[in-house]
Amino acid sequence: MAKESMKARERKRERMVARYASKRAELTKVLKSTSSDEDVVNQKWDAMMALQKMPVNGAKVRLHNRCGLTGRPRGYMRHFGISRVTFREMALSGKIPGVKKASW
Image (cartoon, rainbow, N blue to C red; front, side, top):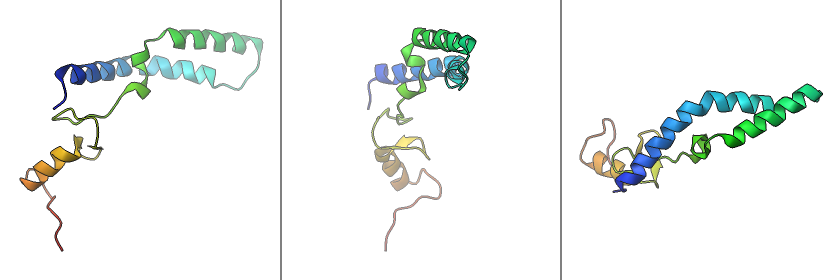
């Protein structure tokens, strides 16, 4: 079980990423433009400086998948949103519909 502070920190990052996503997308669009006019160069410079002033935790790269129940950061299964350990426990107890232990 992960510490509550780690889970809370991850939720805070998710909210921050959602808040700054559109602004960050606009700035990166300006930075990726291919024109080389002097006006565009100045816009790129301003966009780069604005991007650097944004909070670091507002970047999508900072997010880390965690188990929805235990907060475990490793062995995360995207399709179910839980870790492999939790998945196995729930599958064996019959809490996940359509999933059963393989036997041959």
